[in-house]
Image (cartoon, rainbow, N blue to C red; front, side, top):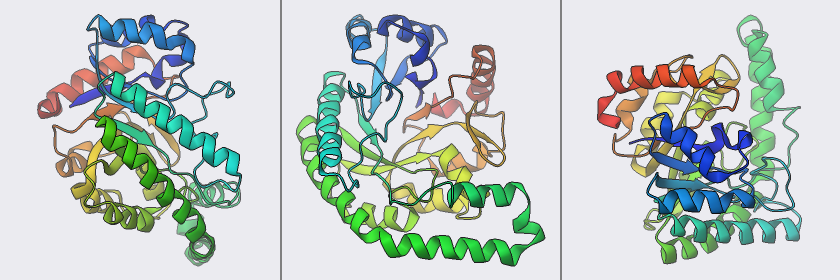
Length: 310
C-alpha cells in the first residue's frame, strides 16, 4: 500500500491542513504523520482528517514534537539514556503519541529505540568515509581491522542499553495493545543506534507472541549499512520478512545520501520488494529538499512498475 510521510513538507507550512492539502493534491491519500510536527499544526490536521481528506496509516514517534524541542529531533529523548529524566520524557511523549495515533485510527507507530553512547564521528561516519575513499578496496585489511574494532566495542557496551530498550518497549506495548496500534521498531542507519541487526532479531523474538510489536524496514537506512559492508540488504530483508509490518521507502545516492526520491538512486526495488507483502504500508519518506516534479514523475514510474502496491 503506497503512502507518504509529512516529513517532506512539514517545515514549509504553518497550518496543518495546508500541509495535508499539498500532499493529497499530489495523489497520495494514505499518509504517515511524521515527527518534528509542532503541536500548533495539530488542529489543522484534525480538520483535514475530519473532512475525510486523508487516511492516516501511521504516525512516527514523537508526534507531535515535544514542546521544548524547537527542531526536528526524534532522538532528543531516548529510552536508553543515562539520564532518568530523558528516559521518562521519552516514555511520556511516546504514550501521548499512541493516544494521537488512536485518535487518527492509525495502524502503526514507528519508533526509535535509542542508542549506545559511542561518538558516531569516530565510528559510523569514519567507516563510511573509508568506503567513500575506497580504503575498503585499496587497503582491505585496514578497513576490516577498523570494522572489527567497531563491532567489538559496541558489542561490549551494548547490553545495558539493550536492556533499557526492552524494558521501555514492554511498557509501551501494554499501551499499544490498549489502543490497538502496532509498534513498528525501525531499522536505523548508524551502527551505534539501538537495536543493531543481531539485537533486532533478538528483540523481535522476545516479542514474537505479541501482535502489537513488529519490524519496520527503512530501505535507505539499511542500504547505508549495506554500503559500508555491515550487512547485505536483500538478505537482511528476507530474514526480517516474518516480522515486517511496513517500510519507509526512499532511495540512496552512494554511499551516504538517503531520503532521495525512489527510483532515482542505487536501490533495486524490484528485487527487494519480492520480500514485502504489497498490502503492507510502503511510506515514501523524503527529504524536504526533493522537488515535487521529481516525486510526481517517480510516482508515475512506480505505479507502472509496482501496481500491486497501490
